[in-house]
Image (tube, rainbow, N blue to C red; front, side, top):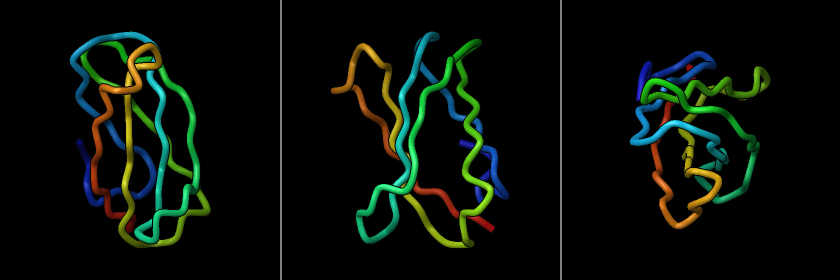
Length: 78
């Protein structure tokens, strides 16, 4: 995943193209945001909420048709 730390947009590698679901969590396990995106060319670009304060977060991503194939990333927001 890059860039990390980020200022709002991250790019994630994916093993397949197609619809992906994502969710953003705080370090206290509170869900902050989520959405859907389309992976293409082996990557998914996610724009994080503009109002997100600086800190550490957990980003979880999975193909929409395979929720058990979840991948988690720790991101740092500047």
